[in-house]
Image 1: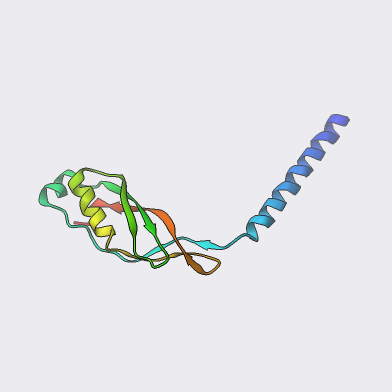
Image 2: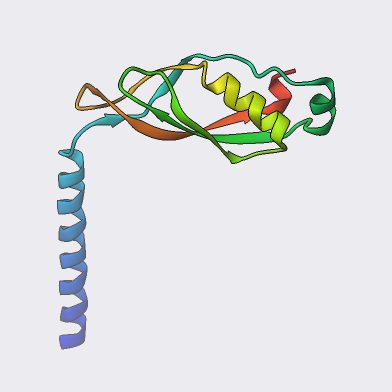
Length: 119
């Protein structure tokens, strides 16, 4: 009998804890991620078009409050000439910055560039 009571007590504590966590999360700061509002396609060589066909490149980008990307780095690349073309292009992108409680803030995001969409 005590074991069953203990189970119910633990379940009740778990549910109360979860509901308190949800309330705290719901009342936390509202944050929205950056969003690309202007993109530039990478310029690839003819050789790169053949080698990197249907590949995906991942790029880490820091987007400050002004929306002009900084610290653009390849997270997952294909090969140096392709990667450099992607970095050059993403540096020309413009973003609507991330916001926290309605105010622009800096954020670092990962951008996926699908090679096959940029021919």
